[in-house]
Amino acid sequence: MTKYLHSMLRITDAEATVRFFELLGVSEVRRHDFPQGRFTLIFLAAPGQEGLAEVELTYNWPPEDGSAGDVYGGGRNFGHLAYEVDDIYATCQRLADAGVTINRPPRDGWMAFVKAPDGISIELLQKGERLSPQEPWASMENVGTW
Amino acid sequence: MTKYLHSMLRITDAEATVRFFELLGVSEVRRHDFPQGRFTLIFLAAPGQEGLAEVELTYNWPPEDGSAGDVYGGGRNFGHLAYEVDDIYATCQRLADAGVTINRPPRDGWMAFVKAPDGISIELLQKGERLSPQEPWASMENVGTW
Image (cartoon, rainbow over all chains, first blue to last red):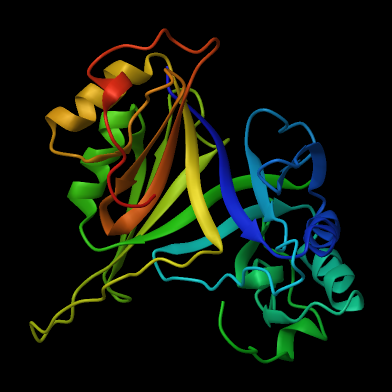
């Protein structure tokens, strides 16, 4: 039987990306350094989803000669990763307090979009019933794209 | 508790994409048409992973005036979706028989890469121990990128 394992994302700052996912409630569960290939793989999962639905971060180490490392742009064929959260307002507040732009605020108490480092779009969906509209979210404008 | 729901992909041919995922053993589990917004959402899951780890396909309908619809390119920040399969040779044979290019053949009996329609990279990993090298795979060259 086929089984989904993970979605792989390329990242330029491993610690910043792990910190971002921590704000969502998604944590590092494994990390493997490959010094010969000069890359690191970091696996993330929400609680209880280890081995079931992970994110694999690929961090290619910058060149040894000190020149600039890779920069990763986005395409349109990949949309986003979606996570369900217990309290979308609390999650967005935690992200905002850490300096993350809330690109699509949860005006409807149900859906928000933010971006992980390297421009990876993340959809947040409220678990269960949508919450009652609440300020400052209800009147917050969209920012940029997602 | 936060929970991963899905990875969203934008696609230009819903039926071709569903057929491709069927070849991997990943099936359509829900579909919702939104005629007012002129788009369709299709959710896919491997057996037993419905509601746990899904792929959301977004199909934006082409314009009513008959002009060309969207075309989606890829970026580098998203790498691939990874699936574990029971028999990587059988899966690759099924894909090849359907005309899918095996970009990175499973020479090692363990890993292969193919592309879904719209250029979405898919990693296939052999479940459990890697298989013994086997022709025609063992001597098959890489094709293109993944």
